[in-house]
Length: 112
Image (cartoon, rainbow, N blue to C red; front, top):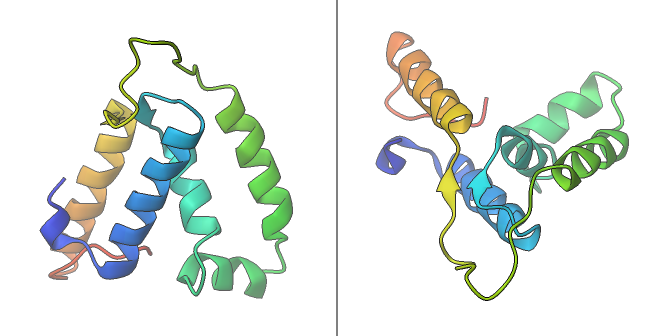
């Protein structure tokens, strides 16, 4: 993942996903964290699209919260809360997003 190729909103979503992982004592940023961050992003495109589609973001966030709650949490004295990794699946998502941006001749990866 090349963070310099991400738009401001995309970086905000990644940072929010990291915060969600930390809050839930998860060691990796999983796709569920990223999707939660995108759906919950204030002024973001994804909540606007879901609203136009007539979808209830609160229900989706509740489902994602439940899924995040099932991700293994790590606690205890050996845990380093600032060390959060990107899961292999999430890394694939970022790589695919960069590939799609390049194929559309976009300079940056955006939330859509």
